[in-house]
Image 1 (cartoon, rainbow, N blue to C red):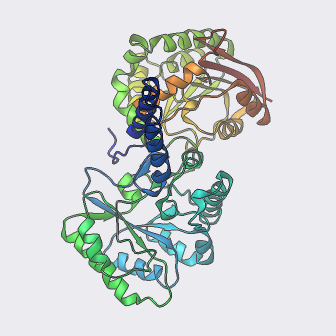
Image 2 (image 1 turned 60 degrees about the vertical axis):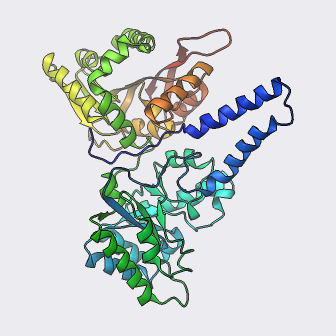
Length: 487
């Protein structure tokens, strides 16, 4: 098991089932003749939906990290900076106590004070995305405006500081229904807070240390601000900050940055669902994965897929091929690929799954398999491949276009890609719900047109995109098989 702190990012929350129960209650009340009272449960749902965005730790619209359970670490976070008056002073205090913090910066201020941002990075503190302009009403505006605020920040820090920011905090901690898909798209984790002094962005500065001290609990994420308000007594504010730090340390807690707590350092940006969620799940499942795939209720899907792939692999393989396998797992297909091709580079985010694969390579004396612990976007290789395959793995990647771009760079002209993945359909939707409850992630199902158009736009000739399994005259199949060649 990973030594990372575990945190829940499930897209299905108990509150969803509460709301479903309220809908069912309303229907029952209508059936038994309580027509007027039947609207009360529905009004409760409306109330939940309306007030949810204003509770920073609620996870109705988006997975939110607001505290680290079972941890003695405290995370100090500073919002709304950097400011030339206050942020350098904060950095000196943090250096004095030899601790790291996290700064949720505003893009416009970061661009205006780049030398301070450089100091934050050089001193090893974490940086978070607090939107480009810190529009406090941004969560009540359109998805396009929110996308711009997030994207502009990410692009600026990537271009100016070569930094892939991993954490996002919405202004005032407010969330909305659009945020989940945008965070997945930019590979950001939503980090709010569990402990704050309600300082109104440093407009209320009285007794900050006392307020924070009463609320500090193990694993707390503390919200402070490093923006300067005209007329504020900086020395008094500094004294409050030092008291906060000393009180935390005296209680035996460690103060760390988000990167330190989560063991998730900046790395090449990916649009996969954060690998900590996926890898932790499969690390735990690794030893019994093969048995589950072929000996349980889900085995029909895997057996069908395995038989389908087994028929196609000999047709696309060649003893001269160098193969890239995305999401190799325990190697259900890797050994077959190795026997049919020259080399196989097996990539996966789960270390424990790859350990099982490595045991198989030793047992079967298959020496032409290179095992790589990484997601596909973080994997660097000078090799150009003749064949790229992925079987029931790319549904963890939210941006299919980005994957196609990546594969296009890695493949030789005339190379082949062979993929099986989730097909968008009614039956698959119910499977997605079940998977979200089990794995805490929402897997991406795709339709034929989306896949075909994306491949073509990235320079591939599509041989076929076909759906299989559980097809009826009313529903489409749940498994999508894709074969294409690079021009």
